[in-house]
Image (cartoon, rainbow, N blue to C red):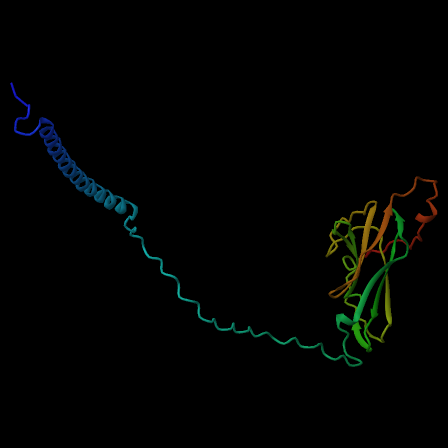
Length: 250
C-alpha cells in the first residue's frame, strides 16, 4: 500500500502544510493555463463571428444601371408670334353707295295673330335702313321673299315658289326709311319649282320669316285653326279678313 504519512525530523503538520501549499500552487498554475487557453480560443471565435456579422451587415452594393439625369433645360427661345392679318375696318359708307347688310333690317308682319282654314293671311315684308347714311338696295320681288315654316323648321311655303319673278326694284333708303311689300298666302304648301299637286296646310302653329338676300328676319308665329262647323260663327279673335280668291302663284 502507498504510504502517505510524512516522515522526517519535523512534526507531521509541517509536512502536510507543505504538501497543501504545493498542491495549491499546482492548481493555481493549472487554472491560469486553462484561463489563458479559454481566452485565446474564445477571442478567436468572437473575431470570426464579428467578421462574418460585419460582412453580413454590409452587403455589397447592387449592380444597378445608373440613371443619367437629363441635362438642365436651357432657356427656350421665345415662340415666334404667328403673323395675323390685320382686320380691315369696314369701308366708310358714302351717300348713294349700295347698302351693306349691316345697315339694313328686315322683319315680317302678319295681319292677324290667328287664322282658320280657308283664310288667306296677308304678310307684310318690311326693309329698314338702320344706318346713318342714305344708300341704295335692290328690294324687288326677285330677292325679297316670305317663307312659312313649321315649328320644327320645316319649310312649307314661299311666295317665290309658284310665282317666281325677275323684278328688280333698286330703292334709295334715307336713314330710318322703310320699304314695305305685301304678299297673300292661300294656305297651300309649296316647294321650289312649284311641283304639283300642292297640299293644303293643316291646323297648327307656324312661323313667318322674311329674307332679303342673306338677311333673315326673326320668326313671327301665327296660328292656323280648324274652320268652325257650318253655320257657326268663329270667335271674334279668330276672325280674319278674307282676301280675294287665290291666284295661281300663292
